[in-house]
Structures are given as C-alpha cells and as structure tokens.
Image 1 (cartoon, each protein chain N blue to C red):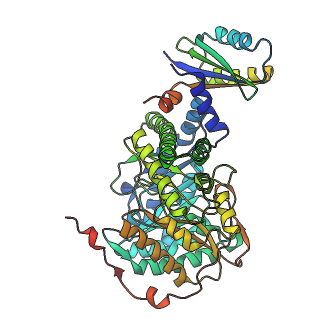
Image 2: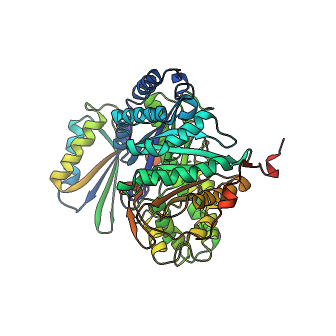
Image 3: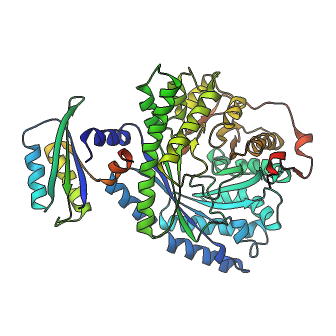
Length: 90
Length: 454
C-alpha cells in the first residue's frame, strides 16, 4: 500500500468529487475512503487513496491535481499519509 | 485510519499557524581535509562540501512536496575551522580564504547558511584559534552565507576570560567592518557557553569533533501552533496549560522526526537529532512573546515573564522527548528580539529591558539573541555582558549564548533592519556603568564546584 491523503478545500460546487475521481481513475489511483465536512463555511473533503498501482509518479499526480483544483476553483493537496500518522498516532 | 479532523488540524497548523521545519542541517566532518598547504586545504574543503551536500536542497524540496510541510532553510555545518585549518592557516588572512571557500561551496549547493567557522576556546586558545577569531570581522565582511561561532566557556572548564575580552573587541570590529549594512555581520556571529555539538540552528551550528562523518540534524518550529492551542484553554489551570503545550510540542516534534528520517534515508546520511525549538520569525503569529502573553502576561517582560517562560520551555522539552528518542540540546523556546514581533513590541513599549532578557535566558533554551545596542557601546561592556551570560550557562549547566549587534551610527530609539528571518530591532539601552577593570584581568574563571562529579 502506498497511501496518500488528498484534501480538497474550497467553495462547494457541482462535480468536484466527480472530476477528482475521474482523474484518479485515469491515473490508476484507487480510492479507499472519502469523507467530507464543512469548516468555517468551506467545503473540506479528504480522500485516502492507494497509489501503489498508479501509472504516474507522486510528484506528477500532485502537480496535476493542483492544476485540476485551479480549474475547478478549489485547492487540492496531496500528502503522503505518514505525516498524519506520525502526528496523531503514538 | 486517519480521520478528516486530524487532517484538517495538521493542515491548519501549516497554513495558518506557521508550523514549519525551520532547517535540515547537514553536518559534515572536515577533519580529513586538514593539510599543511592552505590552497590544498581550501580545495579539499570545497570538494567535500559540494560532493556531500549536492543533493541536500533538492532532497529538502522533495520532502516538502511529499508532505506539504515547508522546510524553510537547508543548511550545512562543518567541523570547527580552527581545528581543521590549524596546520595550514598561519595568519588571520589565511583563515579568511577558508571563509570564502565555505561561502562559495554553500552557494554552489544552494543552501541558505553554512556554519562551523568556529573556534572552541572554552579553556584556552591555540595560535590557530586566536588567528581564526581575529579573522572574524574580515570573514564576515567578505562572505554572505557564512555564520561564525566561538565557544568561550562550559560548566566543566569554566570561562575563558581572555577569549571573552577578545570577542568583545571582535564584535565591535565586525560591527565596524559591516557598518554599510547596519552592522549585519554581528547578526551572524554568536558566542556560546556549553555549546552542543549537534546544533542545527544558526549562527551557532558546527559539526562537533565527536560527530560522525556526516549527520542530519533537523530543527522544527511552531510558536504559532502553541499559541493557537493555548487560545482554546484561556483561564484554565496550570495543569491544563502544561498538558496543552506538551501535546502540541509532541505533534510538532513528530513532524520533525518524519522529515529527519526521510532526509536521512534519501541522502543516505545518519540521523542525529531533532531540535524542537519554538524559534520565532518576524511573521505575524510566529512569536514566542505572543505565547507568553497568551499564558497571561500583558507584555513579554512584565513580572511573571521568567516563570511563564520556564514553564513553557520545560513543557516543550517534555513533549518533545516523548516524540523522539534523539532530541537536541537546544530544544525549548528561543527569545531573539529582532526575529519576534511580540518581543519587538515589548521593547518599543518599554516592557522589556536587557536586564530582564538576561533573567529570561536563565530559563530559555539559549541566550541573549539578536539584540541591537548602540554603536557606541564599549568593547569591555560587551565583554561584560558576554561574561554574565557565560556565567549563567556555566553555573546552571545549560547552553547560553550572546548575539549582540552594536549598530554603528545608531543610538537608542532608532531601529535597525536586517531583513528576512533576521527581522528588525529597536536599539536597546545598555547599562552605562563600566566593567573595564574586571574584563581586563587575565586568565579564566575556574570551573564551578558542581563540575567535580567524578
């Protein structure tokens, strides 16, 4: 497993999840979990994905999701899971 | 599995509360570069630094991108140059050539700072040590990213007062040599008591002679994160306050641990220590003074400041120790003036004096840091301030340091601008009474009684 956390933050609009998931599907990235919430009026979505079968490198996916986020008008961030595990798990 | 609340918390720390990895510092041993010929010495030093550190910046950037955590600086520390250059450098001018080489090598690999142009003289000075110290003003004049330190005393050795006296003069000369830039050279020059061998922070970083060939040391920082956490427990008991600081320090240190392990793995260099320091920057919300205010003070410097800082420093260490097995000796809260907007405000409003800062250094992680004083301050007065600070370190078995900037041409009430992470500072008044006869005595202050532990 090569778990990566993708977060999408911004103004809610139609098709955010669809567009991100289409991109992930085309890139061979498997979605393991999705959750979302509203924080201070902003749409926050978190996806846990597995990139072990991805047909692109982490850097490419990260860059392309960032560009996709710009198109939709939201911020999309890709982070390896370890930073959250380290900080929140003993 | 990680939940969305945890992800949001981490990302808010980075985006809104200035959580960052302050530095990945690659320590490099230059002991094998020693040579009797100055030209060959310089060549070996250049080649070693540029080959070992060639991927440091690139690796740091890759880690930043993988975790979306800013790594503000990439730095290099090397073996104290007075040791490495002892046989080749016969004069201060010879040592300046090494300073230039280090500066060029650092620029070649793209790091922000290089430290280790240092002399370890806590008990006595060799001829090489003295030559290096005398070269400091010129070295700081002709280099851009080089940082310099001198180790003047320790609990085990006492205080080398001859070196303290000399450093007072050298600090004045450095201020004069770099007066076109508001005496900026002094901002890259620090003196220490009980200096750690594995400090990742500048200006005091050097790669101790007991260290391995190369080592990765990481400094993390997050005053804003602690401040935000404390905002949620206003009015609560000391127990709740301490718990909150500890938990936050734990989380911040774990990020440093991750970055250190990754950097170590990718560069194939062993991991040394993590220094969890609340190291402020001039950015709003990245202030240690603001934490002290959040703990309950009207201003940093008010009565209660030393106690609040002692508490903060101790809890930061306790949280950090739980988070990593290799926590560095400087972990705690730094209290530089020019690099902390809250401290600057406290000085401007008359809440914070040099004497109160000295008291605070008894319980903070280092010492008197980034304090601008009038350019007319006498060399012996600067030596007196250094001696006081070294004594605090020696007696309390802690690291202390002094980084004073006597700004040529400026007086009390004026402001000096250093730029970048170094910030700006109001010129602070210094006690006008002299200590010449004390400083001009020869020799050293003996080690204190509690150093006899064998």
